[in-house]
Length: 360
Image (cartoon, rainbow, N blue to C red):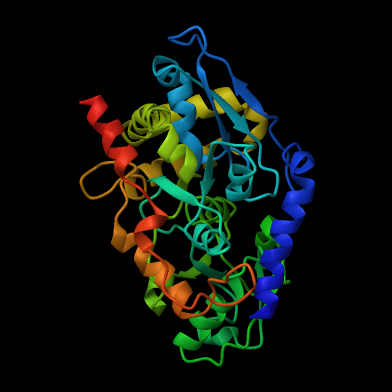
């Protein structure tokens, strides 16, 4: 457990020291889009600026933002959007340091930062369900997760990553003797080349890309092994901004709802809008973008009522409770939280419901 804390504490320390530089640093693993400052013909002389921290290179998780920019819906709300390129620093840290107002994040990370004292909350669910799965080569020797005993996976080094892999292997009847190698996005090529035996892809992106390349994967959902589902991607903001300028975030969400719900009804056109703004050089495989957009529109963007952005207490309680029960929520001293967190405090629907009401 101490190794998990050291990883996370180091992340916070490094981010605090290198914040300004890292906010401008390009990814070394792939071509990086420049910071995109989108200046629209705003409805007011001095539009409010919202800086959005992306969680990686522009991709289909971000489509609704680009659609709302292209359609001028942020401008109609008196907002100017500045897209910050991925820098390797978690969005929660950049919000806490006043580098961004809104960030793309994940329920696998937000609870860890909140346990460390960062008062960041989710303001909308980008994806309603978790699109990541355990994956191995279909033609390889791994037929079940328990076969991963004594093997290695390629990962990103998150605090919950190793315990989660061990849990899956044990839940399938194995000993949980699996080791991780931190490779970031190079993990997928490592799997294809046989250097690791398992990875955790987004089936909405890397899963599609593998199939397009003729690589067949065998995958398992985490829910099959007792790990609760959760909104795959979320938009987060600081509690102070939520409380002090709810009108700004309500207007932001009103335009964003329109953007994502357009992406549901017109996935190909929405994807093209993103490509046009971000630049074709960011997307070497355009068919991957279009196919991913179709899959997200069909299965991930909206809740059963067809609404993008909604969140529930059950969604947040399930996975966060799993983290708590496995002593993965550590305080600033590196000790597991002694009492369950307030799961209601992890998200707010107030801004979302106000934004939706404004659209009616």
